[in-house]
Length: 485
Image (tube, rainbow, N blue to C red):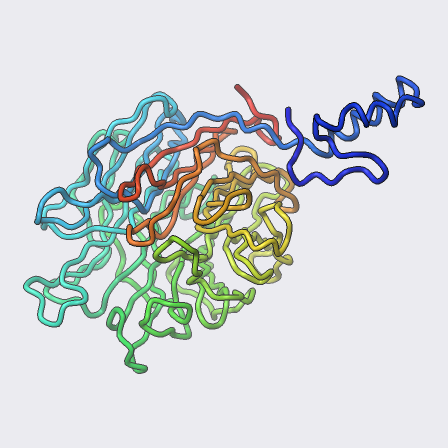
């Protein structure tokens, strides 16, 4: 046990520094032994940092080149089977980046790397992973060539999903969600795959994706727009329905605060489909009551102060885009929609969560997740959230510089067991690392949780030019903040 570094001294007494113990004893010698014990017990209760028992495992091989853009999923049929994903840069002049998966069948103690199929030898990115309730895994990614070139030799832009029926040991052929051959306009960007695992849902095991479509990526032309699109599979990822536009308003094409970005799907208890994204209007919510066949009107549910494109020293770019999840556990907050994001309303980037308990009609006030001093100038960035489907706990991971100087960076897991009203912050025991603005760090991290197992995944620097991907494995007694060994 140790005292919290920010714990304020009790009025009239010295602080808890061990150097002050003689003075503390002299001031308290008139107290009875019982009163002294009671006071010290109180100080310990309010000042202790939550212990952070965990196992950290590096997933990427030593020869992996700049892996980033990570995601992780726990198999609900076999929780010892986890699959993680990332991109890695190529080792030759061929493919610039290629998707990889990392598989464990022993609860995360050992992992093996499985490269993704890439028959066209295209650049891949924005990888994500999800299991459905039967244990089938779906790995989605964008695939492209020829962007940012006036007259490219090859031009492709598309989104694909590969499926695994054996826990990630092998993967099927890529199935197109959308596929533009010999064209990079429009350009499809930042998909994320989600499955409907809700018991009793009429759309159980549907596979969903939402993403951003650019009329022309990076264009400054005011007539060029960004949109949010959606597609679904009802046959286990064998095929996907024709994509539909679900955003009523548009954004620009600059890939900046006024671009519509960050659309993540969440499945409701009765087969609803919820989507939240960010843009000039703030955080925008849309929903479907028929499993994604049709959507309603967009509604802004919160401002996004400072926008989603957040300047972080030592990072080339950093997103504060929203992550949306639904609690479908049997717990007291079943059916609640949660949105997690980062903004700068307090003068520096903080992590927030807000919730709706009535299908998105009304929303709570944002709850600040990081528990350092408000407005202290310390940045938190790149957050992701998972809800444990067994106990309903909220688990949030983010990069954290609260105790560090310059661009030195650490990581924090925050956990709530009261429906997002309060969070306990746990330091992830990875040694702080320096960042390098010239090295692409990725646009997101990831996390999943199941029956008390919480698995944050993250990119970190191991040298000024090299990155690795690691996972931290926490185990909690379900529904509590008690950590298990």
